[in-house]
Image (spheres, rainbow, N blue to C red):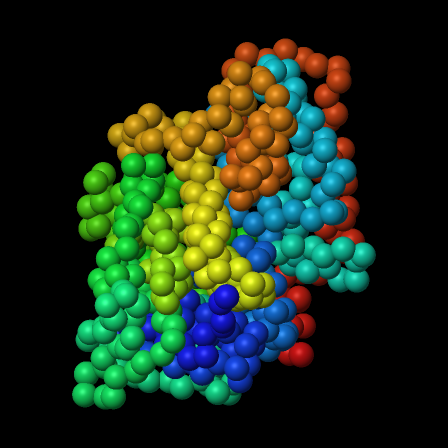
Length: 501
Ligand SMILES: Cc1cc2nc3c(=O)[nH]c(=O)nc-3n(C[C@H](O)[C@H](O)[C@H](O)COP(=O)(O)OP(=O)(O)OC[C@H]3O[C@@H](n4cnc5c(N)ncnc54)[C@H](O)[C@@H]3O)c2cc1C
């Protein structure tokens, strides 16, 4: 029989620590005592400004309205991610990966149909941008929040200032009764059975608890340094291990696009994220192929800031995951448990999943703790690997020839089996629907996302013939345009509405 922990110490006050604290306090209330210890000497990673639609559910589960948290975090809406320069195929040099909803059902079916024809060498337009409402929202500078109540949810994500999000969540956790300790954990005590018993914080009293959550970032203080848990690196499939970040001012008076732009550069890719207060920019790259200095220069050149004295921040990234996220009385959440580079902005989603799945593990008290942990870790690993597969697909499908890096990403990076199977089926003109169904237990990304990435990169035979069965993309595009135009407000106007509420 397992029992919920009655006292928990969280080590780390980055986004992971504060998200975990809020979820636990909301779900378990005064049945649990939570202490969060964070070091003043080690800052937070301070990047992580884009989300998937899953974050919307996080705030809903905490009962926090957009009008409460968005203004506090300079947040904007996000309808999807645009991927320019990953492919050199004519007509497919840039594509948009949309967040989709039931509004897309009709045009998306045309997209799947036309993608299938195009795979078989028929001359039809299969660029995803022409078949999803989100793409038209971007073209029209609209927000992804519908003006009227629809009989279904419309998915969208957010952009936000991660330091401000941390502060917002911290204030809420303190109100809910969390004990906050500023101090550096210098050592960790364990019992003979290998359970953690307490953390020692310099000259302050040590903190003991039933349960410990490692939110110490890449340091992995509890899970790596203390428990020595195995880290499963993704380095053979994903080469990027560093980033350089540089905020820039927002052009006042200009529109705020509801999208992240992830542009391929010579040895990685850059992000451009709009907040209401500034742009977040950065370059994610592989230090095996370009030095941090050269990456910074390339990013500055791209931003037109070669001579500007805006400071750049350099970061290292550890890509991969633990094999056990929950071990004995310790759970790893956030960068300590693993990280898949930020191309699809999935880290907060994984944090949320980790903590929600942990909380719901205690719903059925009759299951043993051992079997619960085994099922939990299996589920988490499957989820991390599923996200990895989709991220690896971007690199495998690239067609750039301008650097050794892009060639190595295409040819030398190890392709996980489930992805290799999807690529082989797509390329051979085989039954892609069946391949997706066969692998549905391993996939995190759904059918539209897989069609978008293959079609968006122009992964098609080069010879084409005309086909009378094709549905002109224009019809789908007009349909999406009409919906975007009728049902959605200008992004800035929508933000004003939420910020002034
Ligand atoms: C380049 C880059 C871009 C990213 N972009 C995105 C994105 O767009 N979307 C997304 O969802 N995620 C993104 N992420 C990931 C995201 O930033 C993190 O997942 C998120 O911020 C959570 O970090 P964390 O809380 O685990 O770690 P951190 O922010 O590093 O926090 C670690 C905490 O542990 C504390 N600590 C460490 N050692 C000790 C000690 N000995 N004693 C006490 N305290 C200690 C530190 O003081 C700090 O409070 C990105 C990451 C990188 C590197």
